[in-house]
Length: 253
Ligand SMILES: [Zn+2]
Image (cartoon, rainbow, N blue to C red):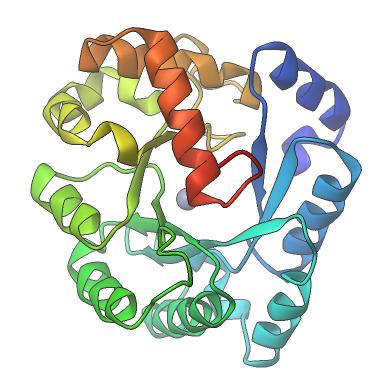
């Protein structure tokens, strides 16, 4: 994203120095997906996800599926995403959001790639769609179907995603005062289904709110999870790393 236009290389170095071994950088439309692939190609430990974010769904047309499919031929593309539904912002017409989601879920199933799901105030519409999709999705090695990114819903919703095989991802927002009500659901996620993310440049840790977030802040989320789940942070780091490698079929996973 443009927020990193000035110092992208330094940001990646800083992340590695803070113990972040691997980064999945995420496209939001065709152009940014191409840039994500280039970035992954140019930096060890950086991988790409390609897709049309629900905010960009209005600009997606059928030929874009083939273009995304071509991009996935690159060995550093590990997922289709972010894809999903966002009825909070509603930047794209809902019909376009449904269509883009359907196309991209079909593409991911065809390629056997995991999906990164963005869902905001649309769980009621998302759950049945993913249930249909996962019931027909059988990757060769029984690999995970994907991850619900920046999860911010209730325990019952989490339970349904988990039942379908999805991983649940949290960011530094779990340390915001308003997230205190989510501690129960954060504790309820099985240790082998939990992953961490930054969502940078968005959602920085509480003490940096209003500023740009970056991958080097990821250990803060690990610490927050450790505090909330009452386990050592080294354990959370180890387990979420192993989970991410398995989810995205990374080397060592
Ligand atoms: Zn998102």
